[in-house]
Amino acid sequence: MIYTVTLNPAFDKTIYLDELIKGHVNRSVKSIMDIGGKGINVSKVIKSLGGESIALGFIGDENKDKFIKCLNSMGIKNDLVFVAGETRTNIKIVETKANIYTDINQRGFSITPEDLEELLSKLRSYAREGDIFVLSGSLPAGVDNDVYMNLINILKEKGAIIILDADGEALKNGLAAKPDIVKPNINELRMIYEFDDDFNSIVSVGREIIKQGVKKVIISMGNKGAFYIIEDEVFYAKPQRVEVKSTVGAGDSMVAAISFGISKYMEDKEIFKLAVSSATAAIIEEGTKAPSRENVDELMKKVSIERWM
Ligand SMILES: Nc1ncnc2c1ncn2[C@@H]1O[C@H](COP(=O)(O)OP(=O)(O)O)[C@@H](O)[C@H]1O
Ligand SMILES: O=P(O)(O)OC[C@H]1O[C@](O)(COP(=O)(O)O)[C@@H](O)[C@@H]1O
Image (cartoon, rainbow, N blue to C red; front, top):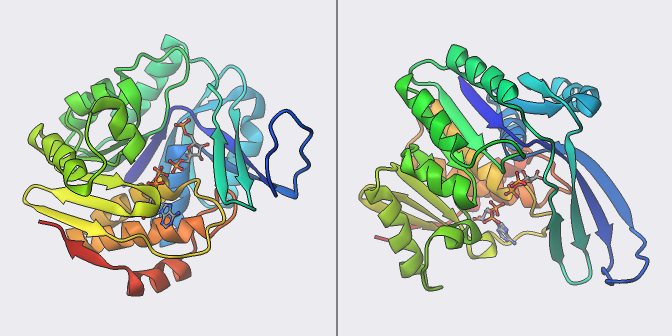
């Protein structure tokens, strides 16, 4: 089974404007509300690809009904820990004239030690050898930045496969516990490593992470494509040209495709093709909508993957 763990879920409100003029009253052209947060998006995309997952993590007591209703209507199994307060709303601004995408992500609710213990005991009781756990997103207040490290240690003891998608100290500490797979974007990588802009320097950082004991590293680079780095092979995927409606959730779609691909015992190169196609299919959807399987399959036929080394 694939489990997604979202410590800090969110409602994503995507606001479309011609242009954002700072310090002025701006009128939106339209706005869209979706449930999101990194792990939740991963569960949405797994569903769309034809897979199953169970969404774990926290949810704010005050507005949980709307969130869980959405998950249920999408057919996504969930077992979330209810915490005091409200699940955050993140604002995504799309300026359509110049194709500028701006995210304003809020901090979110606060977690108590009891909340965390409740989640840990759920994880301990679910995890079985060979299960896939996706740990992703920012940390709510009240959670130490070594939380992913602790979760990885617990889940590894159970023999689970772990995919980590985090940033800053949470990623740095998480890497120390050697998750099986990590998917940093270029900015997340820059928060913890210094490197030049050229592709070889980026690949070197990925290979350094592999040397530290991580099995697969996917470095996503937005409109510059992505690298898939495994022990002795590196693949590069060129970005696919599409009409971009919202870049939110592109990375989560990659993570979803990777976990889905592993659960179906797909070959590495096929997994990477699916990951890039899923991410591209996500950016042609408005708001934080999961890509359609049909679009993913169409893009799979055209995706160009080359061996980098
Ligand atoms: N503007 C774009 N044009 C083409 N492909 C894109 C674009 N933005 C993202 N992608 C695809 O989605 C993948 C993930 O996007 P990225 O922005 O790096 O992730 P994240 O959402 O984690 O920041 C990229 O590696 C690329 O394949
Ligand atoms: O937990 P964080 O880092 O604040 O990110 C949460 C945001 O990330 C998203 O999951 C999108 O992530 P990606 O664009 O990186 O795939 C949004 O749905 C959500 O608002």
